[in-house]
Image (tube, rainbow, N blue to C red; front, top):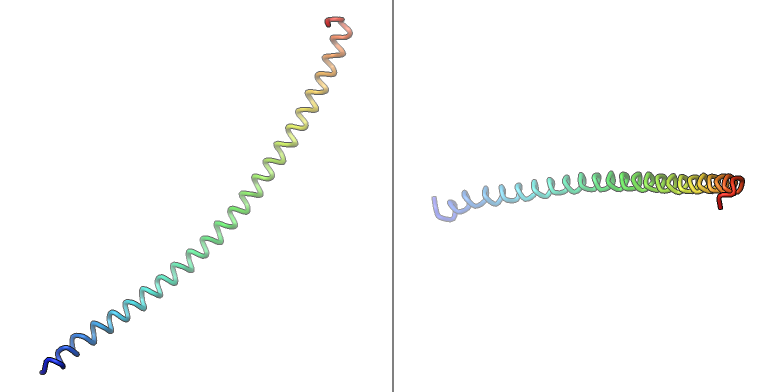
Length: 89
């Protein structure tokens, strides 16, 4: 067996295994990228839902504030009437 044959017998399998490993790593990386894209899509959906819920809470807070202001106005009006009747001022 000559040196050239020995180099080929050792080198070709090593290069073939390196190429196969490179292809396998590229395939795995592509799969991870696909999974990552799906997670990004799910995160975007959760963000949209979260923004909708936050908007609803803000709307409810505004409604509550308006109703509370109306109750305060009614109570102030009743208090003024009571004070006027009792001449407390």
